[in-house]
Length: 329
Image (tube, rainbow, N blue to C red; front, side, top):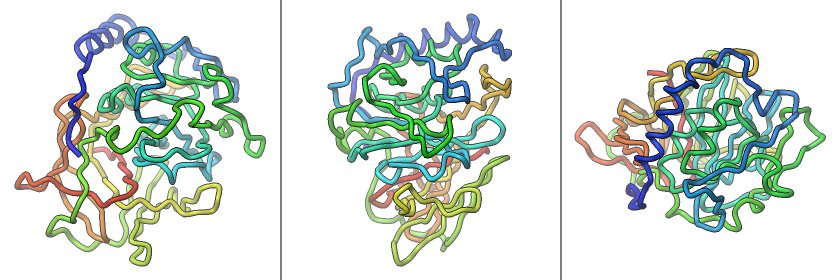
């Protein structure tokens, strides 16, 4: 699937975000903020999201991106098997969080839903006005989210979209009904990621297990020849959803990126890592029980990411769910 041909409002948005970051956000994130998701399940509603022209347009075909809690207390999660792409990123304290992207299928429920991060804005620019579902964000980050070219959807904006499940303690019990935010799945054409699908590349090496470690979290992908899929485990425990089914992507990408401190902190004062997804670097693509050493490139935020062999040949992914784990260079 190639890069987008959509018209962008990139210049205005980038200038606005840059002005906001340099003009005051970086200088005062010292723990005096009031996070919307305060860690006790008490959620504040953000201002109405603006998609660039001052309105929320939920009728246009667009992907739904949902920030998924990945703390041990949040597992098992709901609905992530239906995602086309699952991004895994490092957050405060060396823990991890997921972003599930839905385009071809919408689950009945998905969650637990948690808060957004600054890195999400750069990552989501590859999609055309995506809908971002999240529980809230650090107070000084919300203005950037509200002015980004996406439709932010926090609890309280759409009636009945979110609910609490008493089976889990707060804050790990906030769930989303996706059909309340988008009427139907937009389809594969909305997945403007730059990913290509098709026959496996030549070469590679046999690989039956691959582990990616963060300071306080880990992801292990084990090849199952019987299922022709990678079995996901997190922190040493097999990953299943609330219906008891294993999470089994067809392709796994371990993408080596720069992870640096951001201008923001969580409500405990810990710095929020910023994951840089624009640029270039090395990656490994896992498919079919083999690992392929590849290069990745994303020239600007509105582009998808290309994955190529050393000679520049595009690398195809297997049909099915893709997991992208951002690992530090």
